[in-house]
Length: 66
Image 1 (cartoon, helix red, strand yellow):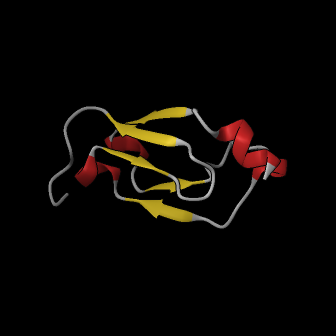
Image 2 (tube, rainbow, N blue to C red; image 1 turned 180 degrees about the vertical axis):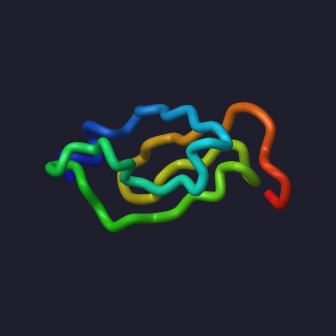
């Protein structure tokens, strides 16, 4: 659970270019990896990863179809 504590409070801003968004992100250190979960931040505008607590915030216009 140490990795979750280190990630908690982390905020990641994403845009339409980052879609689809999943956690962990490709640049996440190996020691803090968890099962990949896709997050529909374009629809919800803000979501928290259920595994690590990282908060993803969508900025800008959502692409067509979202």
